[in-house]
Length: 444
Image (tube, rainbow, N blue to C red):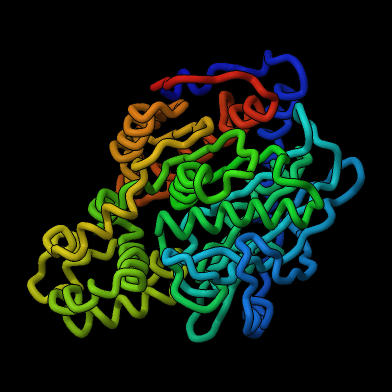
C-alpha cells in the first residue's frame, strides 16, 4: 500500500542507506534533465544498427561499439559522467539462431557507493514502439529523438532517470534495445523468450565491456514491458546463463500475460500497442497469419502494418483510444478473436511468465488501479512463483485512479513511487548487492 511504501527507510546505516537517499535525489534531477535539453532531429539512417554479414554465434559477444555522448546525465565529483557507447552484441531468437541486438552501455564514472564490489545493472526498457527509430539508444544522447520522414515522430528516452541513478551510484549500466528495434527485423514486442535473451546477453556484453568476469554482482531493473523482460530473464537465467551472478530483480508492473494486457488496453489511450503484440506474434508464429487474415479486413491489415513502424508517442497522436473492433470484419474485438483462434492459445501460453521459478530474489510491484498493465496478472505471477519456491516480495501500490484509460497517471505514477520513492526498488536491489538475506514470499 502507498502508506506502507512511503514509510521512511532513511534510517538505514551504511552505504546502502546513503545510496538510496542519493538515488531519489538524482532520479528527480534526471527527470528534470529531460526537459532541460533541446531535442535534436535524428540523423540520416545509421549504419551502426546494420549487423555484419557474419554474426558471432556465442551469445553475449560484443560485435561492435561506438562512442556516444550523454548530454542529459548528472555530474559526479570527477565531472560529467563519462564513457558511454552504442553497443551491438549477439543474442538469440526464439528458435535459438543468433541475431544482433543493440543497446547503450554506460561505464562507471565514479566510485561505487553501495556495499560489495561494483555491480553490473541491466535495464529492460518500457514500451517505446515497434519502428526502428524507437530504439531506446537513439534517444540517449538528447533525451528525445525526433524524425520527420516519412511522417513526424517522437521517441523519448524513458530510461534516462533509471540509467542516471545507477550510473551516479557507480554501477556499470547496459540498457538493451531488444531484438528488432533499430536492427533489421520486426521487434517481437513482449516476447518472453527473446526479451529474456536480450537482457541476459546484455549482461554478458556489459561484463565484457567492463573487463570483469561473470562472477561480478548483477541486478536487473525493468518496468512495464521492461518488468516482463527482466522477470523472464530471471526465470531463464539458471538454464540460459547459469554463470551470471544475478543477485536480484525489480520487475515493476510486469507485462506477464499478454492476453490480460490486450484485453485491458483495447480502447485505451495506447490501444494501438495491441498492434505491436499482434505483429510480434505473427512474426514468430506464422501459422497465426491465415487466421488473423480471416478476421481482419484490408483496412485492419493496413493498420497493423502501419503500427509496425510506429513509436508509442505516434499511436497516442495518430491512433488514440483505438479499438481493435475497427480492425475486424465483424466488428468484434481482435482480442475476442484471438481467444477463439485455436492457433493463438499455445502461443500466448508459451509467452506467459510464471512457468518456472527464478533462482534469485525478485521484487514485483504493481498498481492496484493500473489501467494499462493489470494488477491481477502481476499478482498471479507472484503467486505462481511463490508456489514453486521462489523468493518473491510483492508490493501493492494503491494510488487512486486518475483519468482511467489515459495510462500516464495510473501506470507511470506507480513506477515513480515504487522505483524511486522511499522503500523503493533501488533500496531493495542495494540490499541484495550488500548480501542482506531475504527468503520466502512476502505479499504486501
